[in-house]
Length: 424
Image (tube, rainbow, N blue to C red; front, side, top):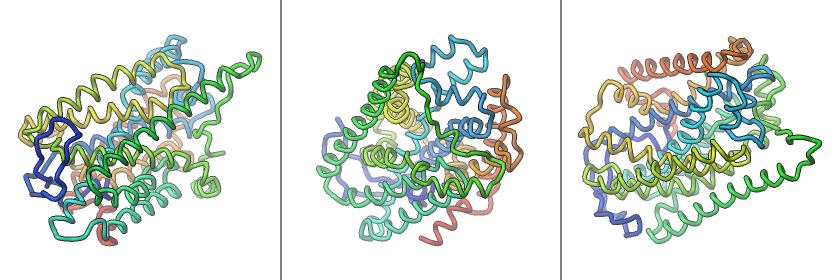
């Protein structure tokens, strides 16, 4: 997305030193330009379309009927596992949704968060090459992103992440000006704090679940999908977002602490040469941990643990998998010599207009699903809802791919990116 993730200088990285682990000192003063790293644009594009693949179910649940299968599948009974829900029935649609939930939930949020950290380091190196003091004017850029997130939350989508990323960037930017030792200390502190907080929240949910009187059955869950009384009036939805601001922004503190750790890890991996063709060993190590450890852990918890582990899977294990995906894509393009095929080019176009596409996808989904627009969310609720939502996802994705390709034929940046660049 724009902000630190998008930059005209993003194709330049520091010359990596040989890495045996992430422990050795990385020289922040040694910054030399190299060839454009096309994998960064592709990864941004994948993160944007992947975010839509996750969020589109929220649009369906928010706008659908109270009996929508997604109200149960997304936020369902805390005492039941995903495998248990599938085994309990629901047909092919329930199986497909379970598979998609395993693949998408939290993975692309994590990937997007890492990319913001990488973008922040790209900006720092750009400042250094131009002889400018860091963070300097970057504070203004981060503040603009947070303001854009506030606007996006108020007028478009209550699950906006831009505000959280902007606030996190304000905190991380000065940290990148400190020594490697300080960065490492703060990185590990944030990581331990994030994992501890999330696990404690899930433990509290599990304790509450077990403590619930048996005659009351499963405790009711107050879910964000019922954030609105109705989706028939756009301005009433805006009013509810404003009046329920604290409730609607409960994810921000989580994203902030998570972002502190993942921004710093992403920046560190970029400096270590994750995208350098010569650093195959580093990429394989990250893939081994992210995919070899992350996927079994994430899927195991999702399939067999109860819904009380939902926070851990979304904000911890999915983040581990995201690092594996990052290294996998980086390795793919390193082996191709940075050559983009047709699919890669299409994804890279979305990546270059990431902020615009993020906002556009939420606008389109709102118009398609909510009653103030086409109202399809209520119309498709029922037996074939899964298939309708998947079809709508591909339709919106097609619009994003076409829009980004056509726009970039004439302009260097996306429309929102152009406005942000002028203000910055």
